[in-house]
Image 1 (cartoon, one colour):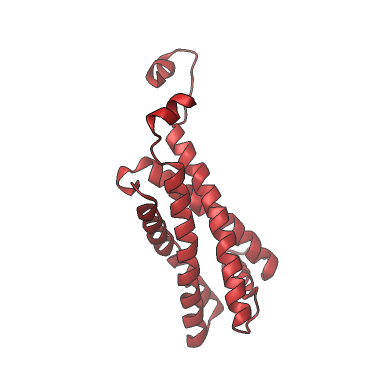
Image 2 (cartoon, helix red, strand yellow):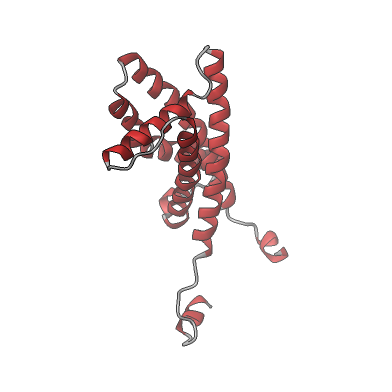
Length: 182
């Protein structure tokens, strides 16, 4: 039917792949929920360790401001920029992950557990360049670098697990009786 519609002279643009749109939607939702969960846990861990609960947002904001200053763009760093960047990047990475999973068969998981593992691996790999920017641009000490990467690794595992589970759930094959009811 798609080919028939696309070959019709009145149809000018291809119809968007519903799996791609679904993957991006579930990915963005999983990215948002994963970001919120990661931040809640991180703030709790920091507060329990008698560190400023919002220090990760400040670090992200200061890193982003320093990066943009290298490009000649002056921004105020700190908490507001860090929160904005974090809540743009999380759902955006989620949408990218969902698109990749929806289009690349090898990444599609048969179970929720496999989807969770794929999500964790994706997030841990893709986030490394962004995580490495903070120690480089902010000239962190060795102890700060260890804390940054240690906490970030665990927090991104949480994010990746939620993202992978959300996309795996959203893109799971439907049973025949569920498809007929739609």
